[in-house]
Length: 277
Image (cartoon, rainbow, N blue to C red):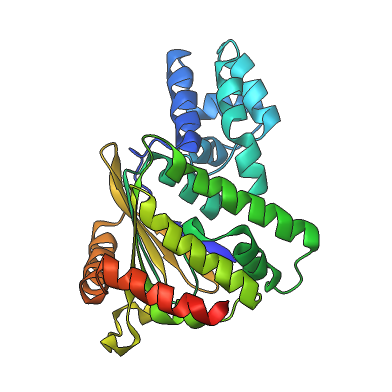
């Protein structure tokens, strides 16, 4: 999957952008321009600029050399280590999404094809990842582990609230095996006890076409701009562009408005779950 990141707001302090902001602050304190630091480190000015904006990850050599050149006494290197493992494992777009999810207070998602990643069981996720052409068993297991780690944010005491609207077809589409689907349905039902998770089902007879363009996640919080993650088969985008976020919000409101109530959604999941046992 390729990605395109548009209009990432510089005020969004993800771990990667925090490193960039800290790098810039240390550089300015040292009285250096970007081209001065670039000359010291042997990087181009454009690369220095991209790291400072959080658009490009720094590697260990860069972090170590920048820390020494700017007399940061290990602070920059320590900050880089906080995100290095995540950056190495995940593509840029996913690393940014995970970073943003860590700061969000509210996640609103629509999924027309599969159970949202935040709500998947390991076996369901495993079946999804096995469907990627050319993937290896090792890659599948790493992807499953990463997905389960992403879900940890929902278990934090101050974690975000998640409102998910899923198409009814998600509940009836065979993924993996009957046992996999039965376990996934049971997990969705158990989530009714989660104080910050709300699952709604858009019924097949709604005749609504608003969500056919693809899945998305809306992310918001008090210390970040409203953002949208837009997903398709070959392109994943994270944007803070006000017009695109507003359009995505409008789509979500239409989908949520036509979805079944929480109680009715649970009843439908229970009914369909019996088909998978």
